[in-house]
Image 1 (tube, rainbow, N blue to C red):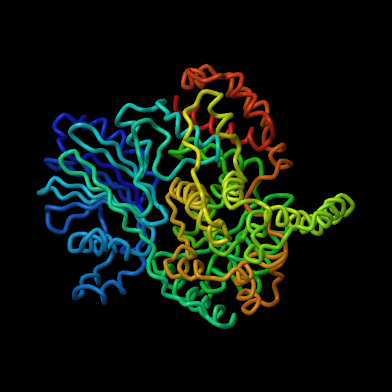
Image 2 (cartoon, rainbow, N blue to C red):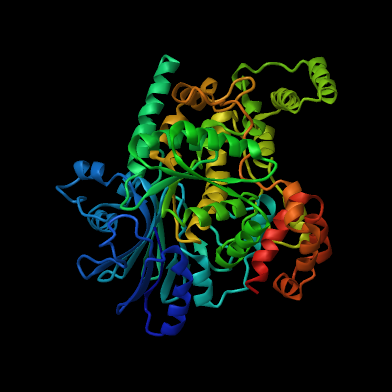
Length: 604
């Protein structure tokens, strides 16, 4: 893993001192090696985290003294590509050199065959042409800013903002996106005049003209539906074996972030088959002790070297400081600070860890979102009186687990009466913080409303929406920034191409039933690790309000930020009273506002 920063084109008037100062803002992404090279038509900087090919792999990389590659990521399928294309092209290590040959020899459309997490810039100095490309899920960031005579690009938007003098110059539409959903869209940055390459796209810059090619088009469905459920379990077992074995390949130790849930537990099980002395790490958040006990129990069953970190006030303060100082983007996810703490401790033992992001969005892991689609195909009519009975029962029942099941059934029943358009609009706004109308009234620019007239909106549609929005824009941003802030690499087996295509072909009954999610994953886990209870409640990394009260006075801290002269100057054109009222309507919106304004305060 690495970070890079560069300027290409007519660089005669580029301030070299300013370039080096800006380039220093990528150093945390790659603490092992930092290089800057100056050409007639480009200046390129790279900060490297050495994971594969420790002795080689220096960047910026040139194997012909004409073309230059800066690259961030890991690509796991070069051996397969070797057999598909020419000769021994991909036998070199590290994969920076393999990638150089791949880009140099093949077409942009072939980039879809690169399996892994990557962002790269390839400068063809003799042609004056720059290629910027990003993996299909956008696991790695890639920003750019086009000027009249040159283009600036980087893994870190803050490096570009510093170079272009844009600190404190925030984009109103990006802030609007954050206020609505707690994250930015995948093609934007928080700063004015800085954009991001979309996942699965390659941007070509030549003669100050940008052209865009999408190479992520859905591949042909390679896995036909099996006639019996046993075949699905067997096929998923094969995919896990292949995927985890590939992602364990490194010249340093690779560990596991083990939460105790289905996703990370399955990854740990398969990793154990290929790696002895496997180290696992999890973080314990008080009042969520079930997660900690499950991860400890699984570690004992699999005989793993397990490390448990308690997320206390000290950890909270350190993680908050790292977020404010090292993130180039604001993010509202309440699991961000615990993840930063987890990475900080794992970094003492490892450079790389596998993690389970993507499992929920591929295999239907959120009951409050996905169980409402159970039996949608049958179009059952709502029994009005039965629904009233359920609502009455919900008030009577005291058992939390039973009450949750009744609530989900009410949601499912109500959902069946909605039109597809209404179902879609309700689904995509389910986790919103503020509405578009609220944001517009405050004074921020707002996006156009969704235009959607579907014939249907079923489970796979909902899963794919979450994959393209919540997963890409929130979870993967959180994983990348939390790990690379501290010079660490997270790999995500669930996002392997074979896993994604397989999940997209699954019938509903292997994803959800009347009261369970992740049906197929539970079947597989039960067959492999029968001593574990795979139906228990999973809390996740979020910080509960009760813990937050111990760490800080959220209302007081938010009020201080809202009263800050610097914040008011940065947000001159808004209605500050209405802004405060909107942010303070509940604890969730207060946290979202705090994370935005705390991040902004450091940069104005």
